[in-house]
Image (cartoon, rainbow, N blue to C red):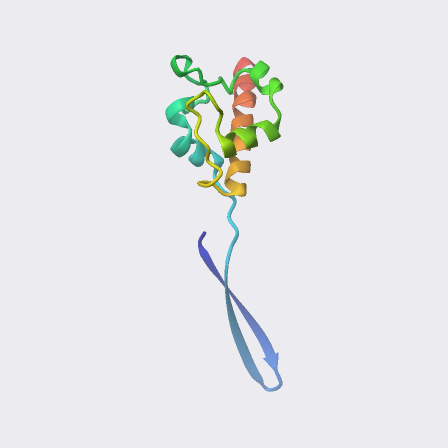
Length: 116
């Protein structure tokens, strides 16, 4: 997060009072950047997955329809038993996980855009 500064000017009687307040602007996590850093090595940068290690193809509309956002969150947080998918619940914030869900969902729309 980048610190931001807001300066408020108030007219107090005959003098000018200037107050500066520093705060941190809330920036939304970048799901694409998180995916690239944490997920692409097993799921490919384009979300198509790797058949050799049996990762899902996030661009497949059938896969997208077969899983809920809640299930995606649970898999990111807790990993998936019997697969190489590790848990990220202690490595990512809730906001980062939600950004990843949006990124994963976006792969379906990108494939649909390519068909047009």
